Length: 102
Image (cartoon, rainbow, N blue to C red; front, side):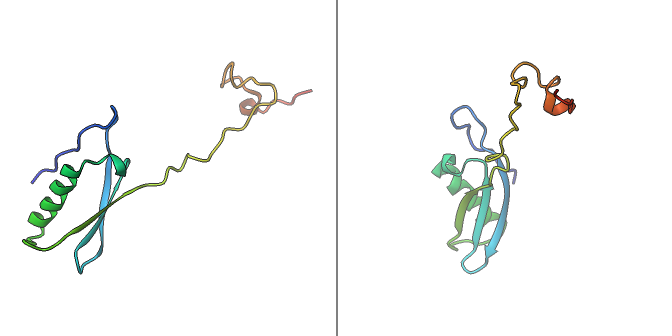
């Protein structure tokens, strides 16, 4: 059964990264996504029913938890150029060229 993508939220696509099963009693699945709070309740029911059908678990309660992956670039800051040439041209910046400033 092909998986249907969720609808867009605020003009942006909700990316489903991967799903894992950390527990088996009761069957618990964790879905990693780009925006966990934006996944509609109807789509969560669709995922649970698809898992129930794929693994032949009729009548079994399935727990589905949605999580967001950490953004690896959230806290990184670009180094500030002492001469403010970053704003003018990134290719000509003194931090990129490593030119000695006299």
